[in-house]
Length: 410
Image (tube, rainbow, N blue to C red; front, side, top):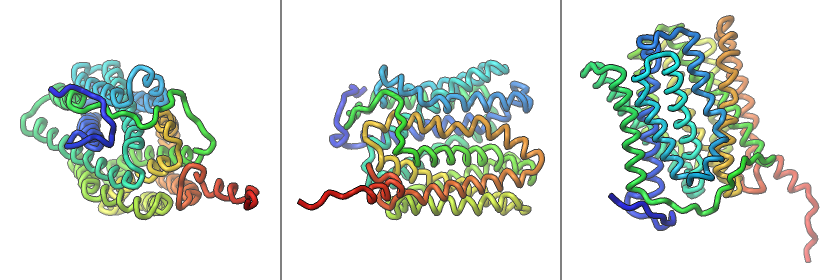
């Protein structure tokens, strides 16, 4: 095995580069989390005998680590970020691998929390490392390629489930063990084969909340709210209203993954050319149309197409990350990644419950409210300057700067 050494990012060569490290991590995360999610409902009902009450509790517990993602800052006193990302992958893999061995209510809760802690800490560190390691000019396109790598892993996970479940007739325990074991193996390989990439700027190890980042915080919160409507209610609409079967839902997942493989890198390149303001404006205008159509759709083919289009807009979220990369002080990347992830998950606490009650009265209202959220996001995106940078975070800050008295020429 190659001894793990420390090198400067610019000195990385061959295949052991920061970008390859990020791609492999995303693939490992995508493979295991896709497997866990694909088997979730069947395992909960068939093995653990869950009802709607227990599955609701499980989903709420799963989101708690996301809400507490800011606590990742404390672990940076113990681990380097790159090391903590690998440790998080190990926790994700371990939680998934153990799932099938504890087919009881509290056993499933416990393994889910363990898996979720690993997943959310990994996502926090992954975002921080990407913003630190990737050059600003090429970050959008590179993030698109990394997103595509995750989609390849997702498709691989679906193929693995098909072979192990339908062909080999393996049980849940074995499939979960294989899936989690793959990520544990990949995390171990990453530790021993990749060097530690030295930080260009030492990261702050305290919670960072700055008023000049307010627009990024607002966009992040609205993105989290929109994500919950998609995850919880868009798929539910497919099944409840149009009677989509498991193979049909899986086909939509595959279509989403295939879309990202081809289009995510192109969307990243588009963001680099257009800028974050134009990209996010396009995303939110599109989302308004998607949510309004969701509210009144009566054709299952149109509904399925909307689901794929809706998911496609997730790739546009790259623009929000690169916007922050441009306006942030370099040492704020790690602490703000944790805070942003917590802000993103605030909506996850109340939207499923409150909107679930609205759904019982009128499902169209859920999506019309979603359209309203997209409109608020659109208004926020229009405050992004065409040239965002430190000191020029919003159009409002630009106006304030212009209003300041200018020094007289010497």
